[in-house]
Picture 1 (cartoon, rainbow, N blue to C red):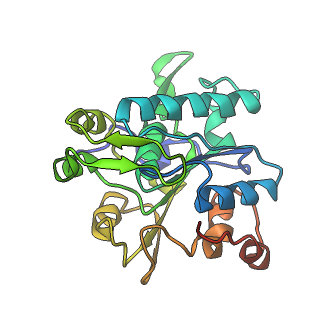
Picture 2 (picture 1 turned 90 degrees about the vertical axis):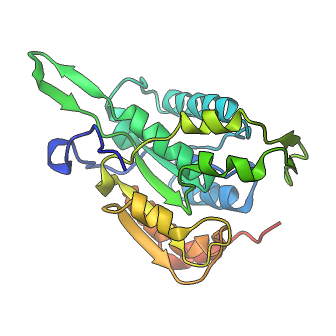
Length: 250
């Protein structure tokens, strides 16, 4: 694993206030109307928070553009300039599977260095938004060869697509090292049937890891962890309230 170009935790600003908005990024071949997406929408509504949930195309380039557009939309709803460091504490990005991979890319991109009034010696390191990653995909470009030529139909939208050779370099271009580990919460299920949980546990070591025995890639028990997710964003959600928000799979 390459060394992160970002400073240690002691050199960055730390969140002091609850987030003001959520950005939810669904997984590969999913959609903004999936059970997890609807559950996060309900959680956001408990606190009157805007929750932007884009439909992310499977093609890496188009997916990147959709995520970027959604981030800008959320900044606009919060009346914030995307270049303003205040975005880091105002926004929490939640990503599932491939959405977790894209969330890692987005946070790393936003964790940019700002020049201080007296030059680099007094510059301020940005930390990027807080993030929650649910069974995140780790370096998915490695898997393209196994899926090359396969045709998929989105179960929510009905849109079909084929995995082409372009997926490999497209995903490779989006790979990013995790930054500011203390601002990242990672939820992993040991019985994930799609991804190797050890890959994520290794990549995100130092982050806040919650590893639940059993489970599945879809993380069907997500409602149980909503209090932890919202607490990561500075909001208190009662377990009983979270349990009542459970959304049954389609």
